[in-house]
Length: 231
Image (cartoon, rainbow, N blue to C red):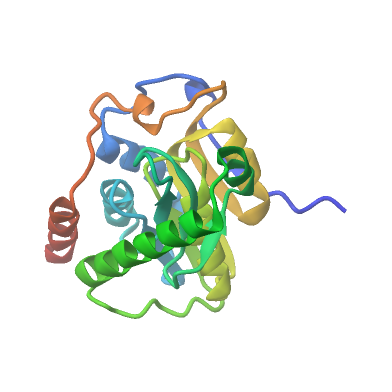
C-alpha cells in the first residue's frame, strides 16, 4: 500500500529559479500568505534556529501566533562542518542518513563521537535559546515548523518525528526553498508542505534562493525573539 501523501503548496513561477527572495524576512512574508488557514488558537508555530527564526518571526506576526523554537541539530561529518550524516531531535534521538554513512565508511566510533559532540551543542543551544522550558504537549493541535530551506532534510525529519511523538494532530512544514528530491521524501510524513521555490538538479544550496544570505548568530536569534515579545 502506498503511503498517504501530504499536500504540496508551491509557487510554480518560482520552480527551479534562484535568488527569488530578497532575504529571510521577505521569504517569511511570502510564506505567511500561504498559511492563513492555520491562524487558529490550536496552532503551534515552531522555527528551527538559527536560519528559520527570521522566517518564522514574519509568519508569527502575520498569523498573530506566538513563536517557539524547536532545537534540532545536524550531525556533522568529522572532516567538514558543511555536510552531515543525520540529525538529533530535542530529545537527543538520532536519525541517520544510512546511505551516506555507508558511502563515507564512517566507523561506529566516529558516529558515536559525532553524536555526542552534537548532543552537547544541542543542550547548550536549548539552554541559551529556550531557557530550559519544556516543549508543549500538542495532542489535537496543529504544528507549523519553519526553516529557511530544505537541503538533505534530515533536521526537518528529526523535527517532524519529535512533533509526532508529542501527538500533533497535523504537521505543516513551511520553508521558502527546497530540493525537489527532499520535498518528495517529506510529503508522506506531513499534512501539508509549503515550499514556494522547489528546485531540481544534481546540486542544491539553500543560499541560492536568497539575494542577501548570511549565517545567523545566536545573539541575533535572541534579538528577534525579544522584538517579537515586545510587540
